[in-house]
Image (cartoon, rainbow, N blue to C red; front, top):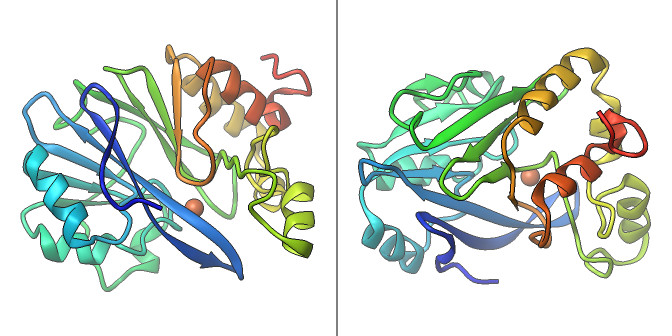
Length: 237
Ligand SMILES: [Fe+2]
């Protein structure tokens, strides 16, 4: 675990946070920081804010945008907003209702905010009655960012019955995906495919995920493999 920033590519960094518990499963956390063309910082899925992480982030530029990609990745938004009160806080779908204690400045939509549209694209992946995630794309490095829609845990990460359930749930390398219960919640497959088509239209070269090993190799092929459950068994559109 490292709570300092690691450069992922030009103008994009990642930081791994502490392991959190999700229904008793140990979940490692990862955030990303993108420096926009105007020099300000876009913070995606923030992890707990340590002094060392804060110092590393401050050295990059002013924090202006705090973004939750889905309604599960909200745990540390409050501490970041307290540390950076001038930053704008963006809610993913359904998060306003869940976190009434937070004062959101805007809700994420299918269109990027004007402040980051030159650098970042986004799509709401629709079709689930349970959890809706906003997928982002960093134009500068051709990187797609997924929080929970693609999980890629090392085979030995979960032990015992948790390992069995994780493999059964389809979130263990070399076959990354969203957990099976979440996949089952996509009752509107048509809407999901329309959203995914927009994601796959991006010239994806790299993929950044919040949980598990970062993929190497062809990013677009990785995304197609992770969404084979939606595309068809061979990942074909
Ligand atoms: Fe997550």
